[in-house]
Length: 160
Image (cartoon, rainbow, N blue to C red):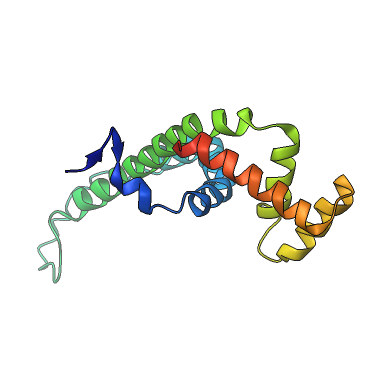
């Protein structure tokens, strides 16, 4: 039994806040994939190997793989397939994430960007200090703003 009163029981055990933070942090990677895939596919297509004719010089071919050209072509086609798969995943991510991000207020987006998207080298305390300065509030109010914005994004992404 996976559903209880119309809800999936597994959602009870998911840390939605951590998942929302990870989703925010994945945005730039997904945007890069979308922005670069066309050029990547063109470059890969231009570099596709071809089947070469065997050299018939009468010498034994030590270690010769008669299917080497075909193997190289298949590996190349797999690279194309992998790029296309990554692109489709990035598009699905954007279709899922962007409406939730757009539904946040400007203040909520700013708070989340300040707390979670400045990079790993920015201490959490500095982000809270920036919120305090921006809104002229105490640290407890800054933490409340951060938690409220993160909770709102979590609900938009994953539901209640």
